[in-house]
Length: 418
Ligand code: HAM
Image (cartoon, rainbow, N blue to C red; front, side):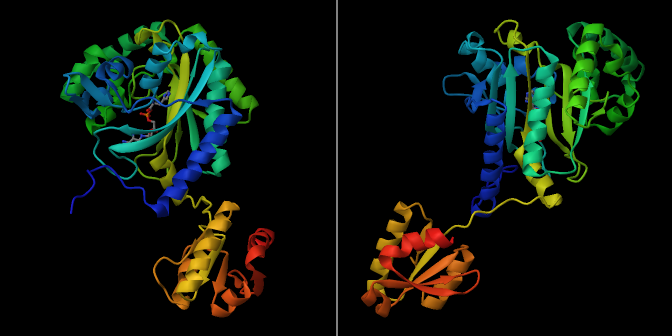
């Protein structure tokens, strides 16, 4: 037997309806917020992520699925959605469309991480990227987009954490202070962090090594170093969230693990799904499009992991509606009757009803069992007597009541009682 690669999962029919439901609510919420779908390729030139996500990040350093294709090009399976969308925005001249342009995606992502609950090597994101506006109300709207989606799903127990990591200028002052702090503790840092400390000190704050974490817990925080403009921007974001009645906590320790962020960053976090509690993460990235050669276009977005969302929904008992597989199940009692059932099933389907019949040669008792398993609301039995008279005996599976209905009335009957 060949197994699926480590860190990947089959989504079987007893799970796929949950995914479809989440995707449906995602699309509905996107429509409410005027956000259109974008689909970008599963793989990009490696450079898109090196320049976008950043060379000092864990994603680029350790987690990317990168390979040379047969033409010798370095290709990477997308580890996240933002950089590819930024590349597509630039390449397709979307800057010339009415701004801001609001995009969402539902996509597989790939990261070579150690698999555990809520952490896979192939996982799925629902994400958004809003490009073209640097106004703080777009930050608040993006956060509200995520919040509305969670509310529509009926999710409880997620808290919103918010921070500002300032602009390039604030970053310089902060990096200086952070470097001084790290230098004092350099001997205790892991070898990778000693390297990062020089090139990209902010990334030392994401290190998962326990010793590094202990040290950085006492590090200066970036919120104390942001300039007046960034502080004003952050105040306005908070004010708009207050006005919208959104609860949040300012968490000066949030810096996110990707290099492109500027100003507002945020996470929706749960403490009921174990170590991988960040269900959604996002923020502003005013320099990313420029980094990819697309000029000075600000942007903001978020992405949430669907696997983590499902874990959270399961652990909090959030209901996911499961559509019945059949409105009516036609149960024939012999071969002739089966031909009539086959004909009626197709007539029901043409009329927009979900209809099923026997394909296994089951006896009538076993057919009832099967009909129950697939959640059929009605079972219409055709025996030789019914075939003769041109009728079916319809049993309502919820209350066991029975009615005799003519073949030609079956569609209207099921529609009137379902
Ligand atoms: P991220 O924080 O790297 O941000 O990932 C976003 C979400 O994807 C996480 O909160 C988590 O739910 C899920 N996720 C990440 N890695 C895994 C994994 N290995 N297994 C399962 N789920 C995972 C980004 O990807 C940014 N592109 C978000 C963004 C969009 N920022 C601005 N726009």
